[in-house]
Image (cartoon, rainbow, N blue to C red; front, side, top):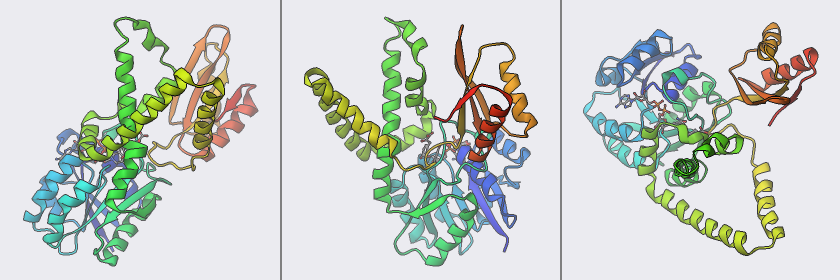
Length: 365
Ligand SMILES: NC(=O)C1=CN([C@@H]2O[C@H](COP(=O)(O)OP(=O)(O)OC[C@H]3O[C@@H](n4cnc5c(N)ncnc54)[C@H](O)[C@@H]3O)[C@@H](O)[C@H]2O)C=CC1
Ligand SMILES: O=C(O)C(=O)Cc1ccc(O)cc1
């Protein structure tokens, strides 16, 4: 049966969902964005089937409404919704990174007889905007749903059926637990990344050269600080208490680390790093909360034309690449070229292709 889905907010997440859901030809997608340029781009590049000109009018045509707006905007719009003439069995959901405050606001929908099922795909990126949208963004990532306990089972099944095409691993969790867990693995790391960047910026007057030295480790650790500040402002405000608890734990950990640094034997310091390494090395492999890219490091000699040589071999074998960057090129030593692929299979083919055509070493980090 044909279903009309209305996506509000056509940035990275809304745009990616639209692209992914469109793979089911029974789904007709209307999109809306407060930014007219984004809305027109989404239609022009085929992300949505139709532009919703008025938020309220388009909502009234929908079987399923998905908010993919910054979380404070989602709350504002949820509060307006009971005034709209929505379809009787409409399901409203969202993609917001926080859930407790959103579910609290959605109580107003519940009172008005409108089904709301909170949602949060744990996949994304520091990039934002419609141009960053990708159909495969959610594949293998966790996608959390936070229904009210008394929501009708058939409504959950309708939403699960719709989202199945994303190939995400859909799980149901309690909103409060959601906010605790995401504070640990997503929201608090964002504060740490931002604070490390501030610490580097503080060096600028006395040691302006320091930032030139910010290579692999610093960049890996702080990538997420490049994300959209408005989105993270809203997440931080909505999850203040959990973040404050995490900050307290972190402060205690830092004091422990300072004691270790000043007073411990080298073996104890090594043990601290060993434990961290073991826990980190044994993290379950998941694509959650990551823009899905498969990087391949190629140790290339530094001579003109080497990059086009490699991309030429890959093109000849019909292997698509999504990104290219050089992490180091210095005279007389080999440089590392990082080539990114959309899938593990493409990366495996690339390893074989490079081995067949060159003597360059390849690595997977
Ligand atoms: N960026 C990420 O990695 C992830 C983000 N999320 C959540 O998904 C939601 C969307 O995030 P992104 O797509 O990354 O943001 P984005 O900044 O790429 O897109 C948000 C879009 O919403 C539009 N918008 C803002 N206010 C609006 C309004 N009142 N009405 C209609 N459109 C409006 C903006 O113009 C923009 O196009 C947020 O709630 C965020 O917490 C969830 C998982 C991952
Ligand atoms: O860029 C990354 O690695 C992210 O962590 C993206 C992200 C941002 C917000 C979320 O709620 C979920 C995922």
